[in-house]
Every structure is written in structure tokens, then in C-alpha cells.
Image (cartoon, rainbow, N blue to C red; front, side, top):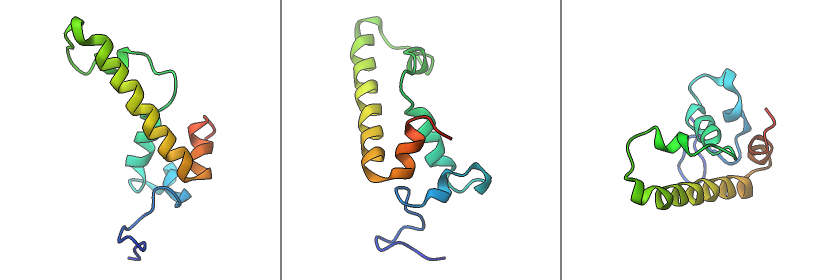
Length: 90
């Protein structure tokens, strides 16, 4: 197996084949991250994962939203193929 200059088997930012669901399990984690960072996700996506004390709900949601945006920005800045996927194109 070839590896990247950094020692990784795949480069999630440049290997567009990882976005192809026909690749099977290869790239499944990346595709899951992309699905999880889509914009406009309802707060229920976070809340249904477990109870959050109501006094902390807004703080948890704010951290979740900032973290999701940070991941989207990192992916968007790293790859044109990922930018296309993040913008909602298959």
C-alpha cells in the first residue's frame, strides 16, 4: 500500500475517491463526517444523543455548532472536491 508523505494511507483532503460510496468501507468515516457537518442540522440531532441539563442546553448547542462549522471550514479550505460535497452536491 502506498502512503502519503505524512505517512497516511489516504489523504482525506485530496483523494476524491474517498467520497465515492462505491468504494465501500474506504472513506466511510469521511463520508460520515461530511453528513454530520451539513448545515441546518436541528438541535435535536445533538439532544437525542443523551440528556443535557436544561441550564446548559444553550452552551452545549453553541459549542456543537461552532465545532461543526470549524470542521466544515477546515474541509472546505483543504479540497475543492470536499467543498463541492459540503455545498450539497453529490
